[in-house]
Amino acid sequence: MALDKAFKEIPGTIVFDAEQARKGYWLNQFCMSLMKAENRARFKADERAYLDGWKLTEEQKQAVVDRDLNRMMELGGNIYFLSKIGATDGKSFQQMAGSMTGMSEEDYRAMMLAGGRRIDGNRRIGEDGDAQRPRKD
Amino acid sequence: MARITASLYTSHIPAIGAAFDLGKTHEDYWKPVFAGYDFAKAWVKTHTPDVIFLVYNDHATAFSLQMIPTFAIMTGPEFDPADEGYGARPVPKVIGHPELASHIASEVIQQDFDLTMVNEIDVDHGLTVPLSCVFGKVEAWPCKIIPFAVNVVQHPVPSGARCFALGQAIRKAIESYPEDLNVQIWGTGGMSHQLQGPRAGLINREWDNRFLDALIDDPKALAKTPNIDYVREAGSEGIELVMWLIARGAMADVAGGGRPKVAHRFYHVPASNTAVGHLILENVA
Image (cartoon, rainbow over all chains, first blue to last red; front, side, top):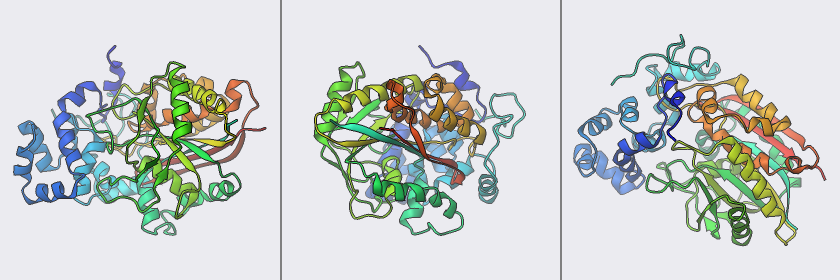
């Protein structure tokens, strides 16, 4: 039984299912490799050469180099894996999450302090909330 | 006989662990978060269990995409805090209870829940942050801990109904253990949060509080909530809340006993990207 299609109808959200996991297998496994200090050092020294040692697609490699987390998610990344790239860059989870919203770091932090993003208008694609901007394909 | 005396529920936000480790607990941002655990810190001194059965999830730390067990019980003797990319947290190692854990595995599998058994694993913030919140800074955790990991990363993840039924099976297993042990069961993760995409930063205060109400008063009905509702209403990472139903399912009232006493309830927004929820329920003798 496939996952209910309702999971694909939530705005600004990619649900990590088997299909995404297959697409992003090596992207996510590359991220896991960054949990070792020596690999982080090798990656930082020459990102392109390090990425070429993994079976990522060219699009995935470019998204990593660009640090485009939304694009990495579309290409099968999962945030808990992708966060290893952020850790390598010395970024907090709040900086990483905020970077996917199009907001500045300050604005995102202020939104969280004010109670976070509202659910109204952000439950289903086509409503009028602030998380409805179209994804890039 | 072993018995479950209480259940404790809490978010396990990594930033709380970082604030704790870096001595930021008295900063204005963090003060209200840690104040929410003052009660638990005092309470646990008079309610120290022999063993905590601690339900959490691994966040791509020990389980990569190589292996994704839906339910994993840790039957080994000890577990180190994991290096999640920022260096391992400076907290004590976790001492397990291999005999009780193996007993639970055996009894629960024979009630048709097919658990994965794990003997060697490093445990991440999902497990260690709740321990820090409740026990504070200590040289050694004051009790044994059986980690129990649930896949809430790759969908489909187990339903609330399945988690609630699993909790009931775990209670039966614990109560059939011959040694006289005081056991607590902790459910961790949540509350509403989303760490990805343009919808990142989602918080749903009303939904979270309704969840807490129902967890206390009518967990059986709450367990029927479909997974899509968690993801839609509480954010893509809010799905972690299904794990709270494992702990709730293990309470006595679910098996016809008395209603639990609500010892403490706490809710605060935000800690980093997340709503903090925390609850302590005691079984009444």
